[in-house]
Image 1 (cartoon, rainbow, N blue to C red):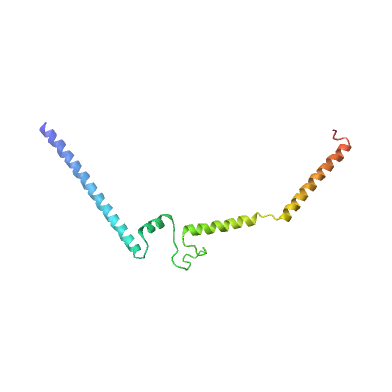
Image 2 (image 1 turned 90 degrees about the horizontal axis):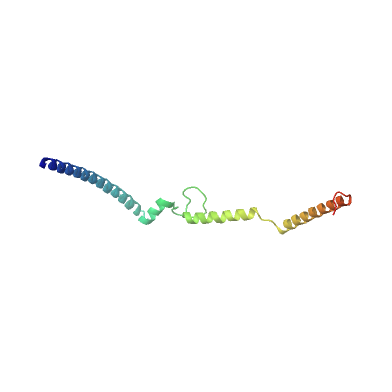
Length: 136
């Protein structure tokens, strides 16, 4: 019985040692990754941008540096996603408004034509009624 207990204890100790070694390796990998990330952030901080801003930029979008148009598209001086989206929304709204505008003159002509068509149909029905095709 003592030998069985000793075997179980040694097996448990070996399992704990293996677990400890694997955790140690994971810890070393995590530390090296954290060190790399920190180095990248320090390199970008040297450019004058905060870590929070860098994280947001990496996650959501872009920022155009300076006054010149770096990427070649004509975004009209928009410096971030929000400005660019607002400008695009205004342009799209202008386009849709200009496409579907109807002048008063056009509307009056359309109404006049519809009334004339309606009256013509009425006259046609009245003529048929005099011939006896339609009785009241």
